[in-house]
Amino acid sequence: MRTPENLGDLIDTSVDPHKLALIALGEPDEAGASQDAHVTFGELDALADGVARSLVRAGLKLGERVAILSANCPEYVAALLGIMRAGMVAVPVNFRFPSALSTFVIRDSGARMVFCDVARLADCPDDLPKVVFDSAGKQGFASFVDPGLFETVVPAPDAAAMFLYTSGSTGKPKGVMLSHRSHLWVARTRARAQPPAAHRFLVAAPMYHMNALTLVLMSLYGSGTVVLLPQFTARMYITAIERYGVTWLTSVPPMIAMMLREKDLLARTDLSSVRFIRMGSAPVSESLLAQIADVLPNAKLTNVYGTTEGGPIVFGPHPDGHEPPLLSAGYPHPEVAVKLIDAPQAGPATGVLAVKSPAVMLGYHNRPDLPVPVTSDGFYVTGDVFRRDELGFYAFVGRADDMFVSGGENIFPGEVEQVLETHPDIAQACVVPVDDDIKGTKPVAFVVRRADAALNEEDVKRHALMHAPAYQHPRRVWFIDALPLASTNKIDRALLRAMAVASLQDSETA
Image (tube, rainbow, N blue to C red; front, side, top):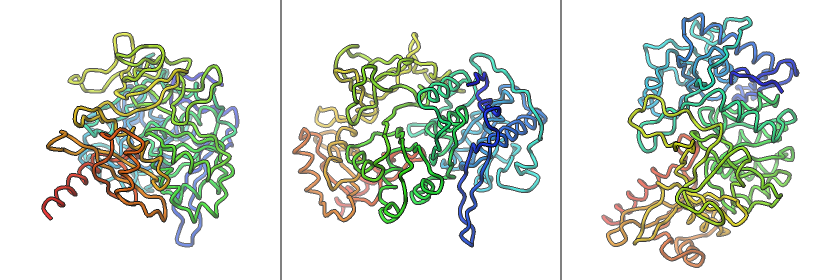
């Protein structure tokens, strides 16, 4: 494989410029005909060059930022590559943020221009030039692109390629600065472990999220084909697998859980092409794994772990060939150093995970007020609590800042959720804390029943008391049809906690 120095220069057109790089699904037209777009490697490479030429022609300088505020589409990928080829910094923006927050991100990044789609045009700052992907007018993408070859900029060793902004659940979003070198290492390392050329990858998570973005870059580097959904919907996700013979799914557990609820469509859809499922960004349960095995029996599932700041490569297979425990994230990758803070560095232990690898961020943009969570010897302190077993496998326990104390006992919601989800009638569970006059805080739970289950609150409490310490059992249980998702496709714990507080207040006043 080629060894590019610029993250935007991943495409090797000498392999096969006519091979499909992207298949982008669109909504059917009024007659029901498919509106899917097919883009070859040669076409995508030319578009990226055209974007780079136009950015330079517009007067943008090396290192200046260019924002992208859009749902997934081929033009998004071309803009991303072109921005980086020109030596500028791509800033994918969370389009699910409220307008004020997406504007904050664009302003905070110092973006000089915004690429967007029509649906997000009104959310772009008025004083910045805009390029609209799905418009045929003067602001349209086709009008902006300047066809022709472009000599890709060779970046400085630690030059930033991208700013990815964290979700901002605990304050204003932070811009994580990621270098060309770090994410070229990610693309090369992942492509070496599982060559992409023979695969079709289904990407439905938004490209402002590390999960989707790094997979698209890896596929481009290794000449794979990405089947790209504009946004996740369970039925479109299922349909795309059969229509395009998808071999590889990348997802987060809540997305797969929603897919599994579409029993009628699953029953009449051929899913036999799927060989691999890479799932991360949130904890997975034994119940969900069992359901996936029933629906996708040909697929090998990998439970992965990564962070925006520390990169998507942390764990992998055991060097001695041991099979990982069911909920394990794996054994430390040979090119990654990990340790548990304030815990023994050998044998079984539990502690906050710290990671050192070529993918660790450069730092936070424009945030001198924040201490950078990187130690003097280069370890990024994740804030995630892990348990290491006697064979060296690591399993996620919970976020250190999700932990709460009830009556003097430390409770990690993820541990309680895993217990609840072993019940045969529970599809998903989320545990959150609420205030309590005696205990300080106490756990309560939201539960999604399996189809046709007749589960009640006492059943859930009894199951928890039988399989976990009494202090962990949820004192109240509410049943809902689906767990709400935040903008990163993770469960929205803040919203559920607010719902719990409101429900308890209503019951007190009733």
